[in-house]
Image (cartoon, rainbow, N blue to C red; front, side):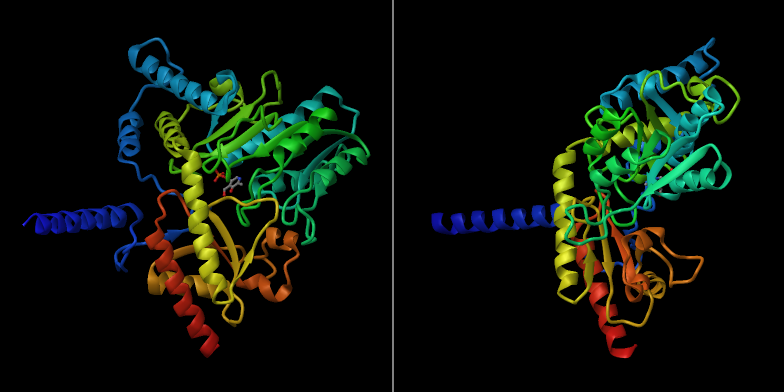
Length: 430
Ligand code: PLP
């Protein structure tokens, strides 16, 4: 009798353990025709947390934070300042140095055009050099291109290329030595360097702290767009030796249309947009209280247990990488490091281009993912793949898989299965 009871007990414990494991790791994910398998989180993420959605609803109807005289205005003002304080603490900077914007694009424009504008105004006869890289997001690169086109007599634009030599430890990223040389050999006083922390297409990480030491030594203002890094790593601008950073809420499960600019105290930049005194007049216009609250809650959520979550993401990335390598799919692997959620692959041996492949994955299997560049046309070339100097034959076979903290192992297994089926079909029939 006692023996029987022990067996029953052990059996029940085993069942409980299996249920817990399945629930935790969602190992037995089955195809669900109504489910979307979303692997395009570098493009945008979704607001999943109910508490965040509830707060958005609560704050969508609030007073004007600038009308501080009455109770509803005061409430809105107080809430924004509470959020500013929280974000400042998260970044370990002064809350006076945090500005809310409508997007990372806007924040990049405010800081880059603000620095250039300040120098042009203060010293009307000087010529200055500004430096960036050839794989920045268009919200940075196109500002520099704009100066190349219209500011050529006063602004000299230098572009540092990423390393394309596979034997270089910075292959796929920016080498600090190249940055140092670009400053050293610049024809004019260098007033600004802008280098992104992590690339949105390849996930390549830069050695920002090292580059920051170089800009400090040379007295150059250093800006870094950390939009693709902040939900995956804890960022402390002072440790990174940067003077400003920018990011956007919709990359870490806050809504689209809210961004942040941190700029070191007393930056004293030229204003881009004239209007009211909101955000110290650098971003005039009534603040979006509901989305500021949502961004703050999302950053709190995404940075809780960040180290463990990042480890989990690397595990999922390694799993997909290994499984896809088994079917002869190449991975573009920058050497200095990559974000844990991003995997850029080349689907070799098929005639179908990445765009058609991605559409088929979506239509047939509900799998959503990104492509670096659509089937190669003159208008749709990815400047990042150009910067990587990828073989011409491979450029329209590139697909980006990007996960989030909500991605499960079951979903990754499903993705791999779909890839295997589709690749096999195309390798047979193309
Ligand atoms: N910077 C990087 C690295 C990005 O990936 C993005 C968005 O894709 C942006 C800036 C622009 O962000 P937003 O959509 O908030 O303007």
